[in-house]
Length: 356
Image (tube, rainbow, N blue to C red; front, top):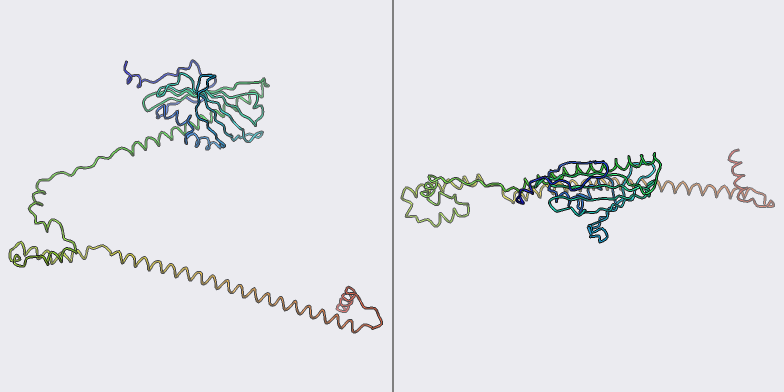
């Protein structure tokens, strides 16, 4: 059996059994190697997927050979946002192991252990999940995800059911988001491949009749002269040769051609520049007028404030002068033998007189 025939056959998962509940089993129009790179190599796709799920503080370590298990392993840590009243976030450490039967372009199996901290009973359990990627065809692959809860300690039956329900629901939600993101990536890849296809250029058909006509046409009629070379053509002409019929035709063309050229000339760049300068000048004048109006309003406001402050100062001075005169008159009206009044007593006397 040839290698090409083997590559066209869908590979079956070599796992004996996938432990736990299956939350995803779908075929995606992407090569198996590409899907593995998207999910398990710290790609931009993986970071965007986690961030869309309100996951942050993401740290992805590279794959390394572990001598203890004779497997490639890596760790992924992140902070997961929870919709739970008892805990808003959870610090998560995910240990991933690439199993031995994984082969590039054929099958990948990744075993994951997820440990959470910062939530109730987090030290009593871990979430175990298995990602199985198999090749369906050259441009398709199948992704299966299953998971279950492993307990480190014994917990009550009610708490156990709550833990399993929450953990499996979280894994199912992640699988749904992952499948949606992979389908979007497949659409983007197909669009890029379509845009890269070269377009065929249309070849001009060879018309021998037109070629013969152009060949027999005088050179001066094949290509219309420009304004610059009209004068040189006239000045360089042999006047003795104007008597023949072809020369008369050329003279008529040279007389009528400048009018056609002048009427079809595009607008001169100088006119464009002048129009642009006039437009900028008008904008500048309008902006200057707006600034002038604003400054006039500010000046009016300053004058108004200055006038108000002057009136306030005058009223303060008037009040001070009146108080001093009243105090002097009070002292003069006192008996010289009486002891002098204090300031408080003077104010009381003044208030009494004012009331009287």
